[in-house]
Image (cartoon, rainbow, N blue to C red; front, side, top):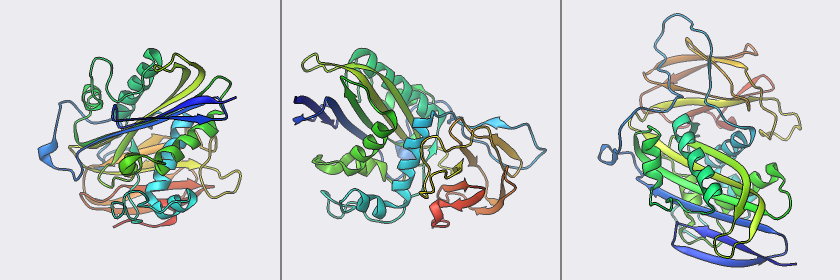
Length: 338
């Protein structure tokens, strides 16, 4: 049996109807504001996300919680950062050139990883839930509230921001891990999408943070009322805050299947990691992040006993340090990015 599938991009700009041989609904959407961070782009008011700690000495306080993320959300973050750090390999795995469809607009240069931000994640949670609750798939709400208004309402003050949306649904039962992996491919490969906006947003080197929300539920297709009883709605809200500071981030995991990458369920929850005198506990999926507010040399310590000294200057790219089977890996083995 054939079922109509909806593929959406750029808000209200494009609509294509395809026929698939499975009961599966797919969609992607992207919206980007700003580029090179500039004070002229500052909008909104409020504070920064909950990931920040300026590490400036003092006594050791109790460990604090890292920004929350579900196992699926951490999986999505790890796939985004894999693509950013190794864009050429990501493109090759998808069977495309990095600038496929947009000659010269993207290159294979490694982009710094993005850190999970609690306020961006809250903005994303609000939107994913609202789209499922009210059966629409747009950046703007039916009342016209934009992603940038949502991000500001969540208290994130940005120089640049962007949003990618993806959803898949079925009249049967989804495999959630496979669905999230497929959504990443949908957004990165961007088949047939003019401007390849999802890939461009995902690989925007100026963006430092992201909030990811992955919500599962029923979705009724607005165009014809078909009910997809099992759907996954994913919102990715990207941003660079007015502070424009450097993040040290990563995930602590055991590579149980030996494939050389983080996979669903491999993270170590509640593991301690310290940067100088600040100690965090990893979230339920093994993720952590620190915001560095001053130049200096910082010692990163993992519960495994491994340490790593990082010299950071103001404005440096984010640094991703994973602890894999007890061994620190910097930027997926690439080393520090210039």
